[in-house]
Image 1: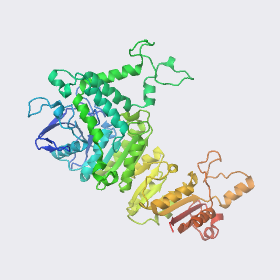
Image 2: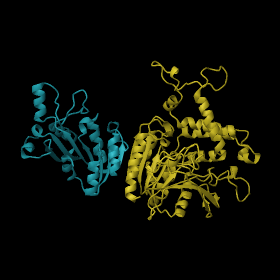
Image 3: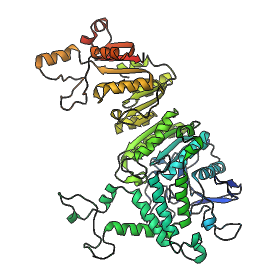
Image 4: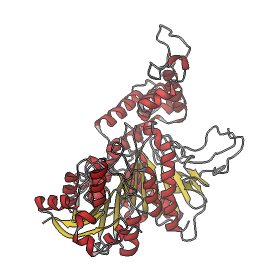
Length: 396
Length: 197
């Protein structure tokens, strides 16, 4: 709970629900006849509507990117370190928009919403949505807000994939495409982790083929497991050593910090939680399973697996960017093993190949994939400098 | 504006694509953009210098020159620049090959080690030259591949590189008939504009 709101915080914010009646044809061919999007905005749109920035969320994110919903909130929005007055995405100059994507579980239409045709929850009947579908729905939101062109579209990980799709599908509507900790498509290893997560959920006896709500339960264990395995891939080995290697008696000059801190100071010689890292993962999984919808998790991982903008261009990503009209900023993080720097560089190379204007930074950071959400000084500095330049262009 | 950069800019055509290897704070690319409407891209590894580029709105790729330039397409830039960096790379010959592959023409500047001051320093003191211009000791210098104007002439000749223009200047980047007459002895900085044959 914040005792007071710091000066560089956007403050107390209230999300807004936008209803859309125009049917949305999805990539799968299915049609969403109508849908809602839960949206949060920070800052003011300028007179010529040129200072708007779209923030695209990642796997488990939502529309609540910055500020607090009430003084009782324990934590601010998921990217509060980057968005606010005086922060890299400076809300004194930019109008920042963030929404919960379709299929999400934070207010936008998704599996946990009621299906108007059946009067019951969509559950497993909610159509598989792709990054392309999200971006199409975001474009409709832009129309609704009167924003013809975003000063920047920004996102990390799965959010970065949406940014990429924006630059391909709506080249005239993006000035700057900013992608963080991103890959042009998943590798077999990435897909494998996602499949383990999905299996954890669907194998939970409380999953009931996705109709758990009708049974008054949630597949808590499955969702916990899915989050635990996901969480491991977000952290680096070094970050885990740092986080779970604080007990001073464990680390001497001659021993490496492996992050083996014990939970109760001694081994249990049973199949209990002995190490801090275990209890941390349990805690993270538990917390997540209480707030996130299992069907949404399945959908989000599928959107990740399916993402590959090169499919329409004979597998040549550079051709996908041929009509892109924006400037690109990409940043990768040295210890990210989910989307390592060389994966981001594949995008940079494709952009160079087609003669696009691109800046790429290789950020030294210990925190693994999660680094893009954290206030890594070098990263925040670069974001500030770049955004300041964007601001001069649009006179925000 | 650094004086060598002033000489270089005369060789850059308006509206062309320029790649600056080791672009530093991006001054040259910003100057070329503002004066000649070029589309520039810099390569740099230093974080602070990269920030200076970002502040100027100069595109920059954080990349180590010593790890190759495979990510760049052949003939994808009009001009590829390498200013005061040649002597600091691991494989100058491979880098120049890559520059010729990527750029339609190339510009390289380097300190001339054949200058009489360097020769005199080594000759009389018997020690590796240290000067205001190259203030490093032999063990901590980033400059690991010194060459002379004559060395570079021979290099270009052996490889069939077409030298479009060679300019030799003193450390104030002044050009004079006497330096032009004895380039290898008197010049401190050599500036080459070259292309494939």
